[in-house]
Length: 254
Image 1 (spheres, rainbow, N blue to C red):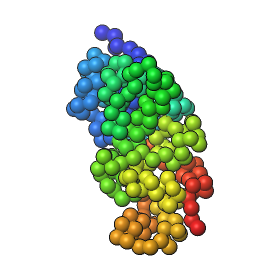
Image 2: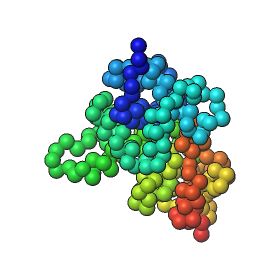
Image 3: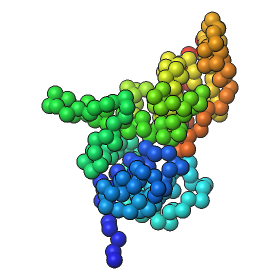
Image 4: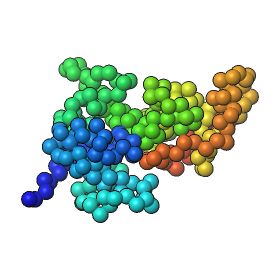
């Protein structure tokens, strides 16, 4: 019996799911994979294998012995390359595909309870919100829903922090490698240039923070983190050029 050909929508949805769930959960028992298999009319094992195929292209896992590497097809590689060439475009397309096939709830984070339904909401706003949702889910899942600086593991307190700000680089808006999972406290500090990450992925605290009046939060949230290595994600490690931009354009070390 010939194999059922994967459509472009199915491949987009599968890659979207690959980005949204932690690497350790790419197996056929995962409820999200089971649910998607029912929507697509495929077995959970087929969905899981497709996700592992994508993982086989990921530089983070190149040196690991990942089963499924020999099963990855041209369509899988094409989708991987398309995403990595234009994250913003493919993030939007994949989110649209998820809405069409799976349902709107799968592209909505708890920070965005409702996507626009009325005629007053512009297509541009819809696009921005869908892309932001993809970016957030991809970054947080890569860091296993844990702040990269302080290890806080409360999803309600976590942010997908852009390394190069959203407004400064369209090409990197949806690229999860331009993101770090940070708690609300460290997201604000990172955005304001009070903290950065050096070439060795060690946390660097600004001199102006060291000079500030101390307090228990100041000591725990800043001083004790200086020189500590940030949490490394399971995939989509922080982009070297983006971190260089943050150190030189945003970080204030006065």
